[in-house]
Image 1 (cartoon, rainbow, N blue to C red):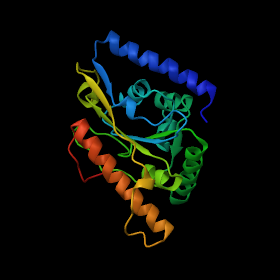
Image 2: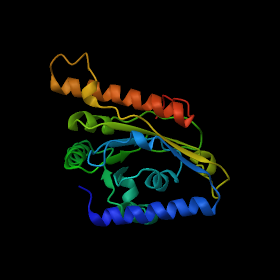
Image 3: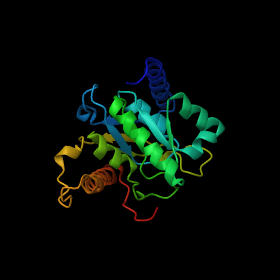
Image 4: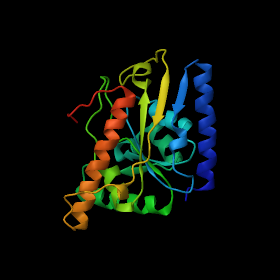
Length: 226
């Protein structure tokens, strides 16, 4: 389960982020909190990524601690890396196949241990609107561990602070939480009784359902490119 020190840091960051929103007069609304699984039920959150604001925003929006899953390149950055390590982020390798497999196994163990994970399955964000293709890591972990995927749509952060912007702009932010998508409720259809194939097919369905929800409530069109 998540450590007490992580829970305390989480509470402090939630208060700080909400205070900043109030001080900057940024309307900040969270919809769908009642849809979250019980606190003792670990889950895998997936959210769209549109701005540097997204991480702190989700800490403020969601009512429980979780571990971010981030690309290993961020660990070496002075500010972002320090911040992410302080909140027990899980760093993963995207380009080394062997290390990537080891990271996937570790994430599976973490998910089963009882601490929820949060992925930005696009892997990055750009200046222009649009939902990039989703990587399968989060959905494979959910299918393997039997944990629900909880889609989270963020709307408004891209217009407030774009990828190459030096200063933020005025705007409002809405975070919409969707119903949990349980892998057990999905029939892979093409499984043919083979567990590996069933897991892959289930992950694809989880991905498509989550991406459709996030596109609808974030107001971002679906893009096919990476």
